[in-house]
Image (cartoon, rainbow, N blue to C red):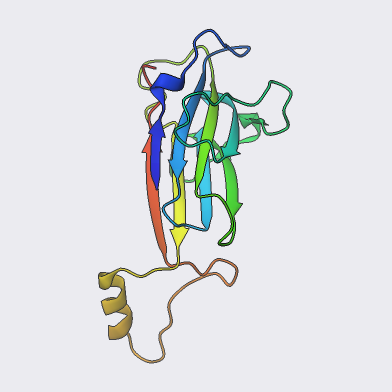
Length: 165
């Protein structure tokens, strides 16, 4: 996936109750399943809008729009040392490829606290050359691991820093 902070889109005059609202552009790269994890220490609430990738004039949802999700409901990420709020999405061939993630920042965060504030994972039904070679070398009785409802084989991860914006 491509995940980039649209720094030119930060409108410092349109402040939320606490901090700036920062747009991040997301391109899924052909993925049909995705997960966005937002560090709740940096971001107060988050919204995802389809089809506004890279559009400088696009604006975040209004304050009362139900697209906004409060990150206070986030849970501890296993092994991450942070508490994150997760948003999940999936779709077929007719679903949008490009999204804007709107991060409503907290006003008070320490230096370095928002280094990897937004992480995106996209899942693809593809196999790397190395994985294919390993699978081919397995004995006949061995099988690849996968959940029945989540059989995709390849995941790409991208992170974005919200420090110093």
